[in-house]
Amino acid sequence: MPPSLCPTCNHSVGQGAKYCPSCGEKIFYRQKSIWFFLSDIFDSIFSLNSKLFLSFYHLMIPAKLTLEYFKGVRKKYYSPFRFFFVSLVVVLATIKLANQNKSTLELKLNGFENTETAFALYDLVDSAHYSFRQDQLLKEEAELINAYSQHIKSIVQADTNDMMDISNFIFDDRDSIMVPMRDAFGLPIDSLISRYHITGFWDQVFLEQTLKVMKQKEDLAQYIFGKLSWMFIILVPLLAFCSKLLYWRSRRWMVEHIVFLFHLCTFALLLVLLQELWSNALFVRVLLIIFLLYFLFALKRFYGQTWPMTIFKMLLLIVCFSILGGILIVLTGLLSFLLF
Image (cartoon, helix red, strand yellow):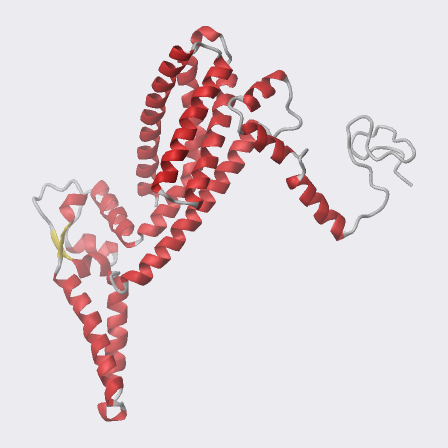
């Protein structure tokens, strides 16, 4: 027997009803199995009537989702911010995963180019080499250990003989502060600061962060990627303000520009995802042309101005986007560098 009242809105439900006549909640006659749960997930994602499918489908039509949103058609689509944020998370996660795989491959190909790793391996191999008596080893094994030890030793000696001018990273008045690479990468930062008399607060901060970045470049890249989502969320309202200035005669509310840009950026993120999945120079150019055409037709449909004026304002918006995006990227990189 179905429940007499809807569990969501408490509206009375008739005998045999599958949905609540008031709110549309699906009525369960009995506890469903795990297969029902899985089929419900599959139906929610891949059904032609699902929010996800309809949102993606209508996103392909320039300005379609934005126009529908302000007509009041909202229940069957994802909200603009949620749609944008989910797409952003998926794209950033994909890029991060791809970069991790590339970093792992590069590390394997580069061998022992990392200074600290070379130091540690050299000490390990050197101690192992002398822990065995030569007469206990076969000739081939002895030659292999000797060659391995000499290879790592050459890397360590090259790094030890190299000098680094750390005055390039700080505001110290001295013309140069030459530091052996082994000190720069092997000493604790407090010992390095004390030994080479780095006194200024910001000098110490910049030196510490610079060396940390040089040692952990991959970790810094991941850290910056973690902050990019906030950069995009801040960027959209700033771009909306530029749009409002360019289209001030249209008397549109600020929220209309924001929703339009959320949908535009969501489409751009989907193109970025395609580019990340298939990185090809020709394909990237095709995607760029697709985005510019999409941008142009979206402006034309949403704001309804003439083609020459739409093209002119699109070019102005691209300049504004580039300037604001560049400033935010620099600020994000600088803050990530200081807080890393």
